[in-house]
Image 1 (cartoon, helix red, strand yellow):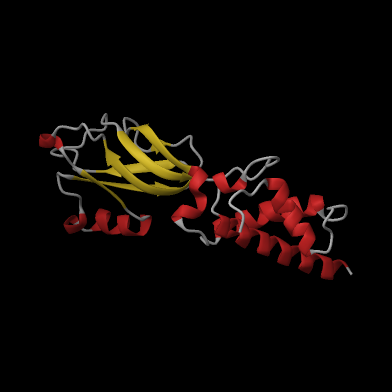
Image 2 (tube, rainbow, N blue to C red):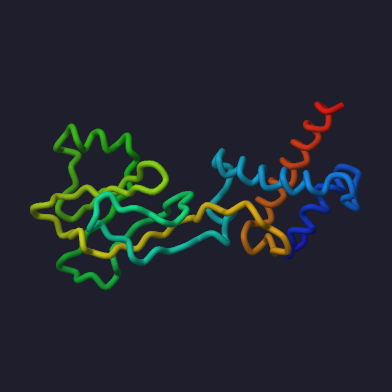
Length: 192
């Protein structure tokens, strides 16, 4: 496998597998199906952390002065949220990302409520992050700045001359190529 994978090379590989190495017949549809294949793999969760290497981001100014906090970033998956490393040891706390389902337990059972050293954060929809903490005694304050390490949702439109291996692992690119070829073959068999 080559270590450099230009977008044009990806499209040529798809077309070549469809007996169109010059891309005279399938080039536009290959682009469409490649972008669609990436979207399908992302929606199915068929990727590893390293598959999306060009989309690892850190937000350094997350706060909950407004709860919920509204994200302006396109977040595919939150990897971690943590306090500013310079936070004083006396006011340390841990941030735990919780699924919405688990938050039902918190609201109905005091045993599951966060301790003074914990902040629970959960996401609803694409842009709303909620913080749950003991407002009367927590070490966490809504003005504290948190860091959010996340995978940005790829913008799948507009690839032209990009070097795809800086954005995705080669393994992921080849899975998307295979899926694009498969879907194009299916489309072709339906059209006949």
